[in-house]
Image (cartoon, rainbow, N blue to C red; front, side, top):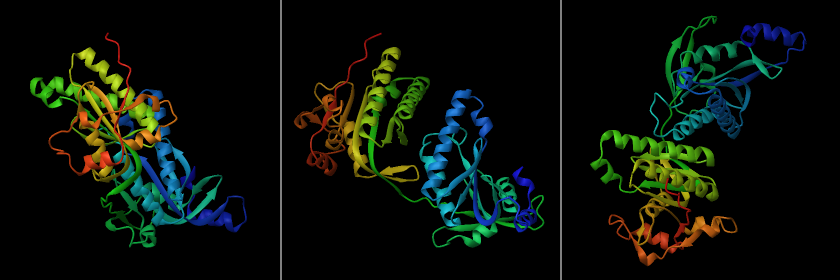
Length: 384
C-alpha cells in the first residue's frame, strides 16, 4: 500500500540500489469530489460510469493543459504530479472555475464540487505509483480541506509564485502519524473575467413565458421550467454543448462547432414541440445562434456575440413559426457544403420586427453589416 512507506524507508531503498525506483522532489496534487456517494446514490451503474469517465476526462484535460499528468485514480479521486507548484495551482483554479461553469443553475446540494490539495516534497516513484511522507501529508491535508477550496502544504506555499497566485494562511494542524505541526495555506480564487474564444453562442428563449406564468399556477410554471431544463441538458449532453448562463426561461449555451449547435437546437425544438402538444402549452421557442467570443464573470455573461445571439432570438417577422431558429452570416459560412446549408434560407430584413427595447441600435446594425440573417427550415412534429 502506498501510504506505508515513510521518507526514511524510501531513502534507504534508493541508497542501497534496490529496484524500488527513484526518490525525487515532486509537486503532488490530489483532487476528489466532495460528498460523492450521497450525490450519486440515485444514479444507475451506467449513469455513474458515464459520470466518472467524464470527470476523469475533465481532470486529465485540465491537468495536461498545465503540464500535469495523472499518476493514479481512485474512483472520484485523482493523484497528479506537476512541474511546479504554480502550474499546479493554476490548474486547480481552472478546475474549480470550469466545473462551476459547466453546472450553472445547479444548487450546492446537487452540483459536483471538488477539493484540491497541493504538496511538495521528496517522493518515491515506483511502478507508476508514488510513496513517502509527502503522499501521507497530502492525504491528511485533504481530510481538512472544504469543498471548492485549494489547500497548500507549507513547502508548496514557500515554492509558489506569489506574484501570480494569491494565498492566505488557514491554520496549523497536528496530523496523525506526523511528528511536526503543519502550517496550511489556501489559494485565494479571485473571480476574474474569462474569455471563451471563438464559440458558437446559442440563446434560447421561451416565447410568451411572461403571459404563461401570469395566467398559470406556480406548479404549472415549475413543471414548464423543469421540462425546459431537462430538454436543454439532454441536447447539450448529446451534442457537446455547455450551459453557460440561465436567466429564467432564457438559456445561453456554447458549442465548438456550428453543425453541433444546429443539431442540438433541432433536437431541442423537436422535443419542445412535443412538450407543447402533450401539455397543451402555447409557448413557442425562439433560438438565436452567432459565433464569437463570450466573456464570463462569475455567473454573468457579456460580449458582442452574445448580445447578437440574444437579438436573433428576439427578432420577429410575419409568417414566422412559433418555434424558430435564426442564425447569423458567420454560422451560414461555417456550414457551407454540409447538409445544413440546404436547410438555411435568407430572411428578408425588411419583414423583421425588432423588440422595442433594441431600438434598431448598434448591435442590430452590426448584425446587418456582417451579412444576412437565416432561418433554419424545420420538419414539423406530427400531431399526436
